[in-house]
Length: 419
Image 1 (tube, one colour):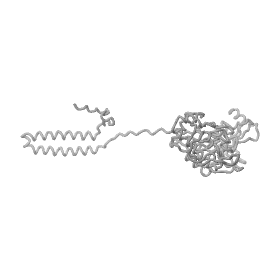
Image 2 (cartoon, one colour):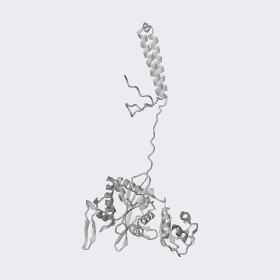
Image 3 (cartoon, rainbow, N blue to C red):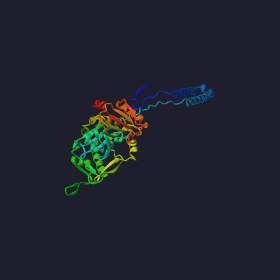
Image 4 (cartoon, one colour):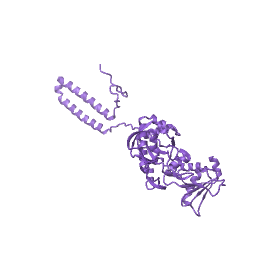
């Protein structure tokens, strides 16, 4: 007994990937024509068998000719009916949330290392090495290196200093204490690109040779934090090799990410971000230039002729403001130490550049004040005042500053709110 044909609208179990299609107008016309053709052929065959057939050949030919004309007309009509198809468009993939975190190893000069992890919404996750000797404007302190900022105020101040210098959003900070890389692995395979020489009591000695090798956690962190006798760029190459080794371990064992970022504000989010970076394995270094800072010491600064293009192209999804950021000075007018720190943090998050910090002309300002340094700065001053909840905004018309756009005097009113 032949198998039952699948009913319309049902999936054919003999061919699960095929679902019967509903007949279109064109198919219905062709089916009707085929039925008439079969009936005409059967009728002609019947006539040909009997005696009537011999006398009716002319009539049969006439019928067949009429059928041919009619079938041609049916075909023309069928061709005139447009073929309709149903297409299903898959919904676009959901965008990946943009996020970032600053990994901070150590506690200050001598053991510090920094790496920015970021996930763009439409591209691969990546790591950006932040040199320890990068000079930045540290709100409340002035211009110092990233390692010094870490020593002054811990990972949170290092995060604020980097956000202030670059104008990017840093969603989380991941503190990793000295020796914390042991949470990932007791030893690490690192392909050291440039040998490490350090000074000892009897002169310099080679501590780590170049090439791939398995290193203990102490030596791994030494490669991150010790500049050695080479230049700043040799040091950056060694740091990149260490981070690459750590990412390789995380990619092979995703559970290692959670152990490394346990101190983050959002450990789950930071671990997911680290795993995404490890899967891509991409490590960048921002454009920097070397500068002398005295006593034979070098430091690095963001390259003024290239940094804007780099930030817009590689970290554009993290920019706090498009275009130039208004420059602000925050002046302590109440005598309370550290009262400008929270003000600076809010300004940086709002897309301002805290260019200078210091003391006001006196410490008895009860009411905080925002000063626009010229007519061009009026809009930025009003924006800063709204951000901080300061009512009074004045304009310096006689001798506006040529360095900053907005001056903010922090009075006792704002200091008490922040406290």
